[in-house]
Length: 246
Image (cartoon, rainbow, N blue to C red):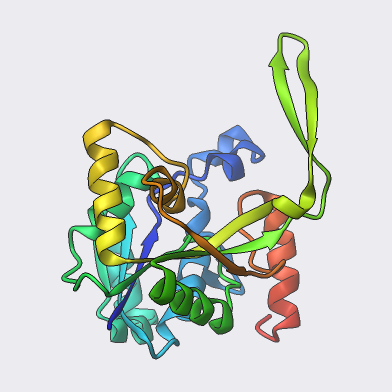
């Protein structure tokens, strides 16, 4: 069995840019290329998977104009990532397009495992990665998740804002994280069916759910954050300091 890792990183990071001055927004790098401790977030993320012995190959999906520059940067500064047969492909407008582009580059057997991980979740641990791989092997599909700690309300949108309809018990809610892991044959068919039907999901698990197949949840971590806003960057810098990197 081989493990492939897909990292969709073609997004523009508009929520990060939205809180930056409009004048500097054009010059500011997209969130996956912002630096923590002098290293791009994307590289910090890729290093986590490059250090996992079970990982056979890493495929990163970028915007076309970023491919050559990132490849050159990795070759010059971060060669340890190349040891995992790093492949860089052109991503698409949506996450689903980027993952589909990466899937086309994978020469996998039906029972090989494909992990999909957010480019800006650099604090994933080897334990989480290992547990998702094992659960995907056993059940066909699995994600990392963290129990909801806030009270969750279902609302109805109105012209004046939002109206609460009901309170959802927290015991039945988890906050989805990545990696999300799947047997190759299951993920490929789910993507093919979604493409044929013109369906756009919010994550890979939603495509598996749509097919009526079970998706297991393994315990993630409150530190396995997705860096999306400037406030997340501040928290990420704190986490790096506690890991002794900064």
